[in-house]
Length: 137
Image (cartoon, rainbow, N blue to C red; front, side, top):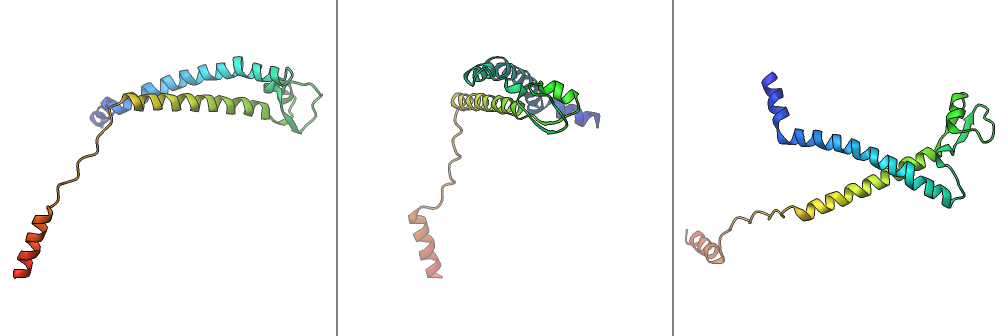
């Protein structure tokens, strides 16, 4: 079992996957920072200095007007944090767009695999010869 595990780990695909997961996690952190620290403040500014991270609807419990999302949750209120969802969704769109661009660039750089040539079938002359031979029998 140890030998099989060692063979599994030493396959190139597993190591590539591990590297991809690590880089993806780091890249996700960068995109989250880009969204939270640069994009959302600009979007909030366009919408009148709105802080999207504190946009929520109280589903149950009592919350004073102007209370932050964290304070509302600490107070035991059940809230629908749609502002946080908006930030996370924008985060996803940026990440998906960047990954799309990376895959598109990688596809351009990789050599195109030619489809294997179709096996050469019999020529017309050979087919006619087969038909002739079959009719002779």
